[in-house]
Amino acid sequence: MTTITEIAPDLFRLSIHVPELDMQFNHFLVRDQQPLLFHAGLKGMFPLLRDAVATLIDPAQLRYVAWSHFEADEVGGLNQWLELAPEAEPVCTFVGKVVSVDDVALRPARGMTPADVLSTGTYRFRFLATPHLPHGWDAGLLFEETRRTLFCSDLFHHFGNPPPLVSHDLIGPSLAAMQQMQQGPLAGYLPYTPQTEGLLAGLAALQPQTLALMHGSSHSGPGGPMLSELAAAMKQACVAE
Image (cartoon, rainbow, N blue to C red):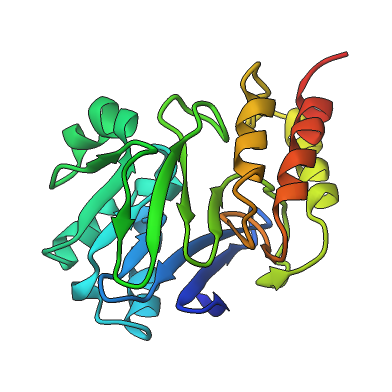
């Protein structure tokens, strides 16, 4: 089943917990004049997500489908959304558009640079290029400027089926998840690169008030300090001494 929670005004978290993985897969709908979905989801999850979206808007009226990087749980269901919503436009980083999306999507993507602004009516979005953060050359994070929401993709990943929204620090659960994954075949899931600290500092400077996470609880409250601390946690988990 899909759990639906309004974590900020007009921002709905659509969460599917997979017990076999002990992990949430979260998708975010911005209900506005031109609705936006962040994370298209896995193909197999599309019926659940479609039905969840239908409780909030007419899914055929979806205008934008966005994501961070080209990965199955972020874009797997993209073409199903594009078939359902004839005016829906894929939205990603410029690199994502030219290296992957335009070859596989039913319609060309809007490849955004940090200077571009996308308006859904009430809300304004920028796509910030963050290569290899969380992972992938094409990675970027979407920032909503009006209410200062950062769509974090896999940053702050933590396991379990925690509450939809918390106000406490997420560094501990995130560090535990990174250390756990470093011990298995998914080592390197969140790579620490020479650019990691600077990219996270730039995100922290945005002073987000909501952090919308793909895997785990979203966060309400000042997010800048945690983004600054995340660099040290990633280095601790991912860099061999």
